[in-house]
Amino acid sequence: MTHKEIIANLKGIFPPVVTPFNTRGNIDEGGFCENLRRYGGVGLSGIVVAGSTGEAPYLAERERLRLVELARNIVRPPELLIVGTGLESTRETVRLSREAIARGADAVLILTPNYFKSRMNSSLLVAHFRAVADSIRRPIIIYNIPQFTGVRMDPSAIALLSRHPNIAGVKESSGDLKYFRSVLGAVKQNGHPEFRVFSGAALIQLDALRAGAAGGVLGQATFVPELCVSLYESFRQKRMKAAKELQQRLLPLVHKIGILFGVSGIKAALDLCGYHGGPVRSPLVALNATERRIVAAAIQEARAGLDL
Image 1 (cartoon, rainbow, N blue to C red):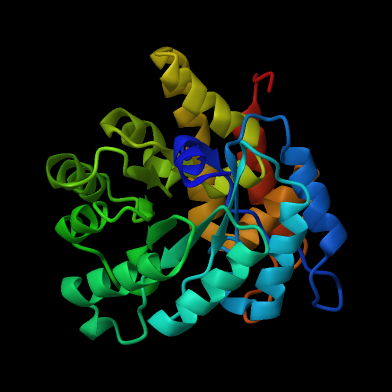
Image 2 (image 1 turned 90 degrees about the vertical axis):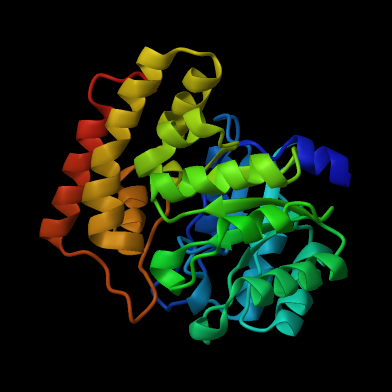
């Protein structure tokens, strides 16, 4: 796809797909591909590979790139293949981004550098993202997730970056609705009109859409994609009663799976919903039987009475 086509399709719901592992701890390529095939036809706008839910910090570079190769054989236009390539240094981020693009990434998701978090002020972050955007030939999406990184980008810095022709959007995953609205406000006032702001937190998804979000990159979309797509479509079609009900159904999946158990809970949910979740990588640990029952009950609560 051309740059213009990628931007035109950068909206809607994207699952940050998990990386299934086998009993030897290696990537379960068959399970990964089967998950992606099952997502086809649901109404998703594409997928995100090697994000937080994909356990990106625990993947070797060759594993990230192999996932891109596998995904590119399945994800077809107009669905987008977005790949997490953010590393700590600008140089290595550029290098990994180029490698992912060479293997078929439509866009790259760049995490804020965070090891030296006390030095990550706005001017430094702006310079970092500009340098990456100047150096690659596909759009980049800023990834702001301060609860993991300890780095919370100033909305004015995001608005400034939005003017760069190769910076297409931001995935804002703090879950802080007030802050999310401040990002949207800053971009609207001082940014580029085509810059896309995505919510990475299902907890506020409907409010984010109301505020002007382009869509969501939601962990819950990995195991209940139909529910997440239905919420987005209900909002888009102005069926607000349905949208509100679907948002309420997302809440137990947020509180009793995502917040309570993190990636381990999401992978257990995939298993329970017939996808391939599989084990997590150490030092994370799988859920025990009691915890899996909590996840199962949350899924049943969210789905009760729905024909999805």
